[in-house]
Image (tube, rainbow over all chains, first blue to last red):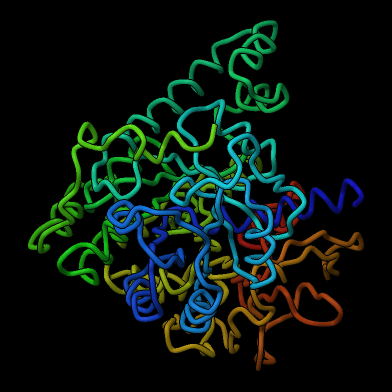
Length: 297
Length: 189
């Protein structure tokens, strides 16, 4: 592929991520939920057989969803449809691309297929989103071709604390990079284990070269507003909507809170009278070997 | 009234437009509420998801104020914005603002795999423009009162109507500033 063709392709991939900014991407497990999400104003849906809190409860190996289920969702909604493959599972990604999903999430929510290598995403025409817990991890994924980064949080926990930790880590590291001299950036790239060119980009621009969304533990409109105020450009809501008592109302409230994240009057309005949120987990109660955020590197 | 160009910030690529306007020395402000419209001399409705924007417009009482705004002031609308600007849409999930007389066809090219980059012809400049089309809509039943400003293989991809502009591609994703420049010239004159 010529370099200008390659640039055009990357612009199209990142371009779709740009179009999702300021919006909410909702996990859905069937066409009916997908319709509820679209009607509530979701800017995209993530099609998966089991939402993270169910994966957590059921245990076992979590894999790519049945293409028939993803296809049914594609036929129901007009907004972009995303789907997850396992970390490093090149063949699952090829299947999802052949199915023509709009975005692939190489996700720690599923059981990793390769403990050493992530997918080389530049080879794909469909854009990828990948999780990250800090700047080094984000830049490694972008180096492999990710067109969007989402901070991981702790999926299926209904607890915002890890999402906040990861957003703050990313934000602080980016801010720190902008204060450094050019002679310091190679050392930072070495320490961080991140591509030098991308470290230089962040130091110069004070932001990632691709959109940066937040995920993992968002359960209320206020949670969505919080991560937006910390710099997340959009939010992924997994278990938080369809594990709550009134998914349609909560979905719409989270959409409104994501747009009006800095307007407390709107946040008050949309937070009032919602039925119960998902129960949620104390992070310390999750055994180390069941933590999802540590999957991938 | 001030000279600010409003950028509708309900959802989508609004920050990219702010950067484009900054680079051209035009002052801008984000708009999420109707009481922010009077401070704007013009408005950009960016790309994003038209279903999401349509819902938020109606929930936060922006629908009628936007229609009223467009009666006296210019609007540039991109992709999802171009869908909203139409007087008819091939999909009942999105409510048209009815600002320019055409029918918008949503997602005619298919999924993201069919998003593409193409050289398009501009009526105001001889040099072709490299345009990015992302899950793009198309113009249909375009009124003779509207003017085709750019074409791809003879197909309209940008139209003007009075001082309004509607585009099915994304000038904010390009380093080539000619589209924003053209609109700014049109609305100043």
